[in-house]
Image 1 (cartoon, one colour):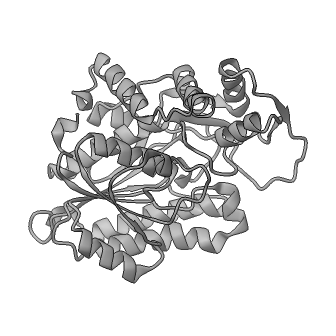
Image 2 (cartoon, rainbow, N blue to C red):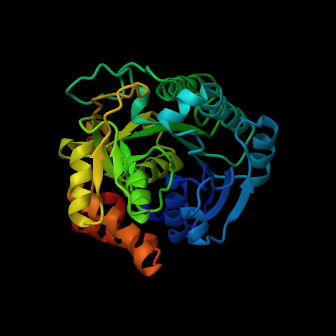
Length: 362
C-alpha cells in the first residue's frame, strides 16, 4: 500500500490518542512504520487508543506548550508529521472559546514553528475540518479555493488554522525554495463528518447513540434535518496517507489544501443516519429534542472532492449504508463479544479498495 513509502519511516502523529489519531497509528503500524505519538491522555473511558494496546513511542504533550513541542520534534527526528491534535467539538467551543483557539490555532503555530528547525523532516500533513470554509449554506460543495470562515469558535479556529498553514507555507516552506533552502512540503486536509468504531466523545451523534443504547435509554436528536457529508474514518485517513506519500516523494505540486469527502450520495441528514443505524441495531431508540435554544450549528454543509478524485485518483470505498453498517458492527462486537475489530476493518477496507483498483491500495 502507498508504494510501501511508510515502511520503517519515523512518523510523528500529534493527537494520536484521539479517535482519528488512534485509527491512523493502527494503520501506520500495519504498514511497518516507526511511530511516535504526542498527545494529551485519552479523555474518554473506554478509549480506542487504550484498547488497541499499541507498542509505540508515546508522549503526553500539550501542543499549547511551545517548548515541549520543540523538544519533542527535536528528539523524535520524524521524516513526516501528521498533525491531528485539536479541540474537535463545535459545542465545546462555545463553552471554551479560548481553549479552542489556543489548541487549534496556536497549537498548530507551535508545531509548525518547531518544524522549521528539524533537519530530518520532509513532509507535514495538518488535518483541519470541512467547517473551515465560510459556510453560506450552499447546495453545492465547497472547493479548496473557497474562502475560509467560521460562525462558531470551532469553525473559525479551523479557518484560522488554514490561514496559519498557508502563511507558514509561503514564509518558511515556500514551494519555489523547495530543494534549495528547505526540504519540507506542507499540506492540509479537510474531511467531512467522520464516523466509525471507537469514538466515545461527547456531543457527537454516533457516540451519543451508542451510549444511549448501552444505558437502555432514548437518544435525543438535536438537529434532525442538518445535512452533512458522512464518511468512515478510514476514508479520510486513506486520503491523508495518499497526500503524505506524495509529499515524502518530493512532489511539491501536492503541497496544498485538500478535501476528502464522499460523493454526494454520502450526504445525508442526521435523521437519515439515525434511521439507518436503527436498521442495523434494533436496540436504538430515539426522540427528537424539542428544545430550540441550542448554540448555532450549520444546517447544510457539503464538500467537493473533485481535486482529490482527479489528481490523486482517491475516492471513497464504502457508501453510506456500508459505512453505518461497519460502524454499528464495531460497537456491537465490542459490547456484545468484547472484540476490537479495528484491524479487521482496516483489512476489509483495503481489500475493497483493491477490488476498485484504487492506486494507493496495491
